[in-house]
Amino acid sequence: MKVISVTDPAAAAAGLRKAGGILSDSLIEEARTIMKAVADHGDSALLDYAAKFDGARPDSLRVTREEIDNAYSQVSKEQQRAVKLMKDRLAKSELALLKRLKGISLSFEGVRIERQIKPISSVGCYIPGGKARYPSTAVMCTVPAKLAGVKRIVAISPPRKDGTIDPLTLVAADMCGVDEFYKVGGAHGIAALAYGTQSVRPVSKIVGPGGSFVTAAKVVASGSVSIDMVAGPTELLIYADAAADTRIAAVDLVSQAEHGPDTVCGLVTTSDKVVAQVQSEVQSLLERITRSDIVRSSLEQNGFLAVCRNESDCVAFANEFAPEHLEIMSKNADRIAKKIESAGLVLIGQNTPSSASDYCLGSNHVLPTLGFGKSRASLSVLDFVKVVNKVKASRAGLKKIEQPVKEMAGAEGLLNHYEAVKARRDKE
Image (tube, rainbow, N blue to C red; front, side, top):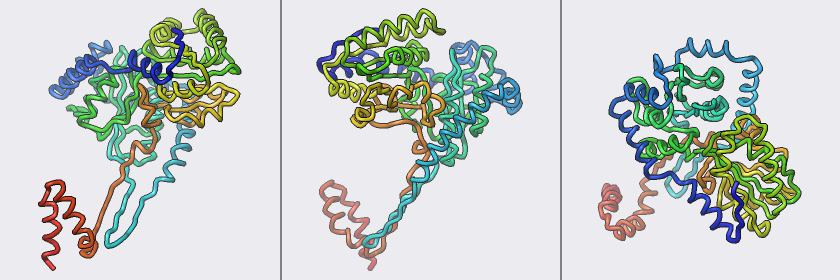
């Protein structure tokens, strides 16, 4: 992990983003090329890309009910109980938010406005696969969609070498209410959801995390269909003061780095001693952990330890970096958390590891990356509803605004806008 001495926290954080967090033009164009092929050739392109990228050629793109039932026989009761716990805890959190979403109706000066909360009609949930399996993501994407009232929930995930989907992922998706599951991933899977093929009907919105390639594909797809956010490779930033347990900090960095070599894990502190201890702890862990090759690659390529002059600079660094996960390990964790404005998820205190939030704390682990924590937070029921606006004006209400409409239409050179209002007055 590289050590950075920070004098300008905003510039240092922005520099890290520029170095490793921006989707390249070449990646976008590669995704666009693949997606155009799917738009042009449909299922045949999906199968060709599955063979090329996943080393698999499924017998059918859609998962059958028989395959789902068979998946249950391959999953332990303990795993099913874990999925149910995740589902129930997340549902409790989402329902608390959903109950606050109420329609608004108001009348004033001859105008009535109604703002109704309605579910979107269909969603496509991307469940990462490949080198690891993510049944937890099936829970995180599906539960808020189901609670919001989405009628058609589609899931996709890359097939394994034998052309099947991981059994626990299928079970989790089924337990949470997925209606259709397809054995396809990558940019070609995103294209299927966006444009449709012979087997896959397009959806109204695409949600879910993925690597850089999937993220690039979602950016391309956003020209045709709504997406939730830019949710690419995992990020973790830890704020640690001199009171922090450096071994715990090291374990947490390692736990997130195992997602893949493109994961970004860092720590910000005012203490050179903390940096030295974390470095030592990480090196010690690398000698005995599983997936050490992935962790080592991730930390060598993207890991960092930033040393700031004071607490305020640490906070400024964190707010500019806007990490997916921000852990605060400090004797004043609650006070510091109040100063955080930009993070996908803020985890307060040493007993709140990001790995636990990935599963069972009741929060959603689909979070903004690449600095988009500045403008939004986690996936939630808010991503699966829309506000339907209805307006009705009386004759008197329209007459009351005739002159302001005339003034603005004239100022903007759109004179027929006013004529449409005037025509109604002329009928009097």
